[in-house]
Image (cartoon, rainbow, N blue to C red):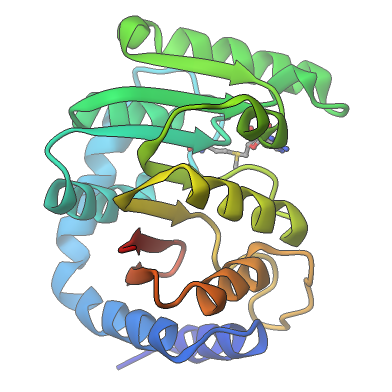
Length: 237
Ligand SMILES: C[S@@+](CC[C@H](N)C(=O)[O-])C[C@H]1O[C@@H](n2cnc3c(N)ncnc32)[C@H](O)[C@@H]1O
């Protein structure tokens, strides 16, 4: 039985301009969920146990680990990885601990952000401390994603977009990421369902930007997964 939450999410997609293959991907994911839920739980708990040895104040990431593990292992033996939005390093830690990587690049404003200076300083210190065992395998850039893309010359196989969640910023982050994504590479957009999904009252959210990008580039990409939280897009040309 599909829950009322499922229908709210379909309505949310419809209101935010999703195209047909997104609905199909989402329905497929929800139908498979009962068969995979214990595997998802195990994967989440494994990452949570690892995180217990780190300094974190929040955990936005453990719920994603089953999907990341199955999709990334299926598509790559070893890959280069960029993330926009690192916070205390949770997603980067998952990658560094569980996958073979060529290079890992983390971009975040941390305490360069105008607000929450004290909290962001603490997040940055946690980030550096949490990743200290992986020192030679990653680099970080403390700057806006816009500035990073302006300066960057590298290409990547996997790019995670989890920075500022406003529609315009997400649109810029996806389109800039696409330019430096290798063919066969994957973009993962976080918080596809964001804000109040029941009233659909929030407008400055990632979904419209993600949907517009997919619509415009539908011949160049494959939607490989749409779950309750994220969407995975593969660059095919
Ligand atoms: C949801 S958090 C990232 C969570 C992280 N991926 C994890 O797994 O825990 C979003 C991050 O985006 C950063 N951010 C916000 N605006 C940004 C921008 N314009 N450029 C780069 N990073 C930004 C914030 O400082 C914050 O740390």
